[in-house]
Length: 325
Ligand code: DON
Image (cartoon, rainbow, N blue to C red):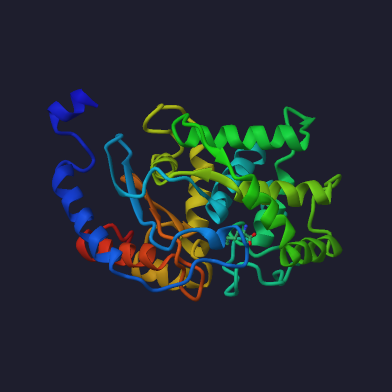
């Protein structure tokens, strides 16, 4: 880092100046009090609507954060691109996509529908992520128990975050499982249509899905995960190769087209960078070859995306030319 600093070879050379602009956008978005905190999972409803954090980690390890960046939240659907990445690393794209498609569903994230082939539309919606959870089951031909799968996945997520310790919110997990009528309905509907791989234990698969949603991280940590994705799978802090570059390419492609619920098309048009949102109010934003950003503010708009988070992205693209096209 220091030798690059002397040579002024950073990916964002005027980083201080850049951060000042980020700060301005942060304060502007803070005034936005639109939206409602998700209430369909009782434990999520308890989140304060006032939390607002922004963290940035560039692919050469420069960092900036402002606001509530050290308070852990459950990553919810921001886990979906990550579990998808793990499945791709384990099995390769051809095998994974025998079970799940690559098409935006054009519907809500928990809608009871499958595509024309009777597969979930993509891994970024609940149905697809549940199937992805059923695919993460063996390493080196050995079947993993639920406990081993949890450890294995947690460890992967921690390596994506530069070997930082993540948390698990048991209350959110229990609350999710308790109120999961729709997810169970989706699970059974997919069972009826034989969407799962052989020998899949349905109950374990559902529990594993709820557990992945209930993993806890801070804005700072999620920004590092984003920078690992921005950097082709190599974590800029630990320099470890966590995901294969071809897995990262697939992950980013589907985050780009399907990552923002039923706002994905408009978001790809207006903002133009791969992003995934979660009902806890988090946005995992990846600017390929530049940086990862995490935005966190619990109040959501009608489509389920963080109001401040979406506004931040739109303001960012007005100021800087990060749109991929
Ligand atoms: O399964 C659910 O409904 C939540 N655990 C996660 C939902 C979420 O963040 C939306 N995802 N696409």
